[in-house]
Length: 455
Image (cartoon, rainbow, N blue to C red; front, side):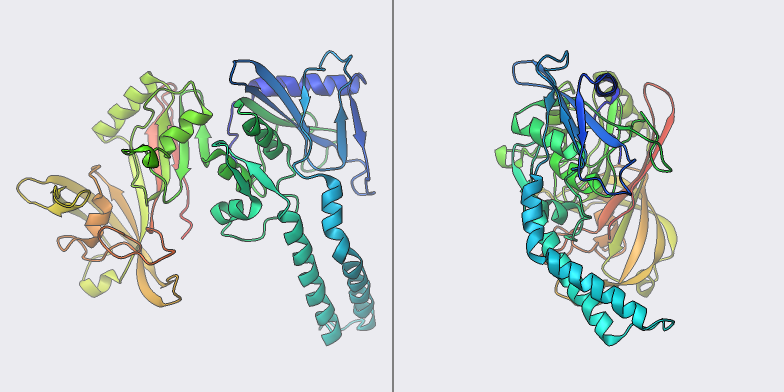
């Protein structure tokens, strides 16, 4: 995943700490190492943060459980705060203890049965039974471990690993070790103490191998941190530099704040919370609350002005993917085309838009049918739907939803559309902004981002 915060300052602190380890000013104790891990190095993470009074803090943590860091009070780095694991190793061992012996015995039994069947590639019934029992016990143990983990998020709220996985892992069981990397520990500590992250970096230190190079910076891992960090931050960051940020907005979150405190949680305020130096109104464009996908925001006024101009002039390229609740060929809709429709606000039924040839604003939409498939709704009913690519040439309110649902368009609403179609319980709007292209205001580089839909 993309590094959520600038790395430069934290990277310098990583080097200072590693130098102190090599000079034996700081102690790094390795423990319980298997033969396979004996020559492995360590992943050292540093987070530089600011407290509410403006004081700066340097936090350090090591990924995993096979190493501990000790900074003596007499050390020149005694002010560096060592962040421990989120869950003590003793608690994890206790959670594993109940099934550990039975899993070990079943493994021995499986290995024994494998030898007995010799050349046969077909597992014996007894062997398959042992494998299934072991799998159930292993899953039970993993669930016990996962239930121990909780993460303090940027908004100050505590989320369980189960809640995190519901948001960013389709409620699937996460990989072993999720939550044990340095970054979740550091951010949890920072958010618990109401610190604002300024810089974060993780460096590998030790013997090089095919995966890791000594003293090289590594961004948070996709397998574990890619699940946890977006939930902790409230943002799935696709790209970030000193001028702008691109995020993958989740469905159900506002792009900008609405009226009233109950509508204050939005992408804009989440960005401002993580990056307080950001301008008051960083939004350059917006997505409907129910739409997911790529959104760019500016950190400074010059970038905001330049990006706004690109959107106004139509030089920004956007692509969306949607699932239509029906089959386009049944309505003789061609596989490719461009529509010109006219809509205005229905003042008596806000925020609905209605067709108005005379007073409406023109909405131009290009489309390409990608294919047809079976869709299973939350209630288990299957139906035929159309996967379609939309390329809007204008930026009107609800443009794509109307191009789909209105009788002057396809007459086929997008699945999960609460305004112009129907949305079953547990269903979302199947509309995703998957491609965004614009010119970087500071560098002049053409920036291209793609984020595939999850449906």
